[in-house]
Image (tube, rainbow, N blue to C red; front, side, top):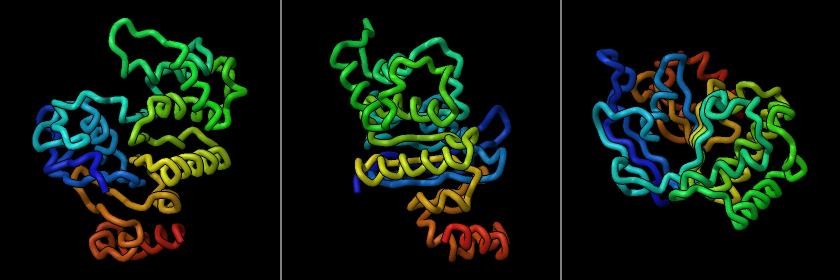
Length: 250
């Protein structure tokens, strides 16, 4: 399978504080990777370094076989940040306007939304089943509806990978289940790779085919089924807790 992201011996420091140490892994086309770890493990930092939002202290990152510093086609990467902080949920905009923002990163100046862009917005709203929300204000929507709108914004540029940071934190169990089924469908039907940060190690195993566990350094990367038999994870978690995680997954 083609490789989308390659991380080689990546380290990152905040000043003198080491946040990430010597991490290596790869994301291939069609992967659904659950990224987990304890609070303060560096999960969000890792994503921000991959996206070029924070500088590399040491190591290499390749995006679509290009060095990160030479990569420019960011429309290939859809990103939903933690708590959707890039757009306030009270932002005075319609659903149509919010989703159209997802096309601006691929445009040169002047950045304008064209009729063809509006067709793309309409198509993605239809695909996600939220066409009826098109003219609604973002602030009027439920948490689950807002999450689908931001997913549409990430999808409208036809990315090859979607990166999520704790996407289900504010969702009720029913909305969470619906959201995960939706992104799993995108993964299986469209081949879009998924890299998703989660605290819920037992739940993510229902959807992810690979598991990435970091605690400042790489603790485990591989198939979720192999994680359940991993002696390294047994020594990290303890046999009892590892059994609970795997039992809930099964």
